[in-house]
Amino acid sequence: MPQTVSLLKGHEIIKVKSWGLVTEAMLVETRDKIERLHQEYGCTMVLVDARQQSSLPGERFIFMFGKTIDFTFSRDIKWGVVISDETNEKILLLKETVENTGVPIKSFHTIEDCIAWLRE
Image 1 (tube, helix red, strand yellow):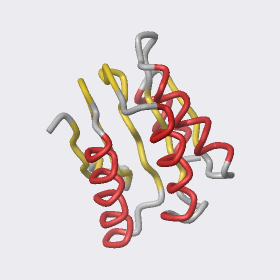
Image 2 (cartoon, helix red, strand yellow):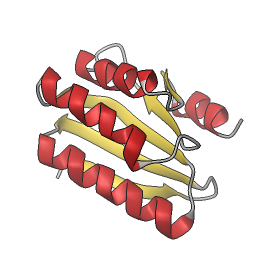
Image 3 (cartoon, one colour):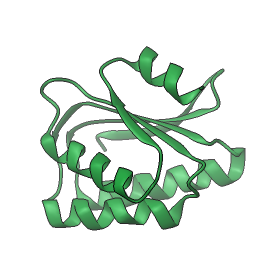
Image 4 (cartoon, helix red, strand yellow):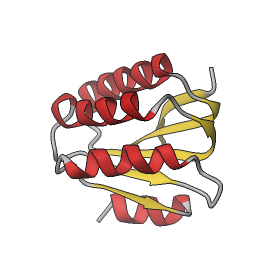
């Protein structure tokens, strides 16, 4: 599966790394894994490394999925998304959809900048 979900040691951050083709099922599975880690460890920061994603599901699914983040997780969870100049534009649509629900989310070009913001 072209996605991993783990704890970033020493930072209390849930890290999602995804690459290649990301399907609807993978996004849902990843959200569920994040929810389990949040409940088990109390992590309130999520770093998504999307720099190597090449494809995401259609815009309608992305929009609906983005809205689920608001009611699946509390708004005290911060989401940082690491992107590159080649990042699929649908990840930006997902970020914008989540942001419009009031969830704190921001995009970055480096993991270091993302971690610094998450820890503020």
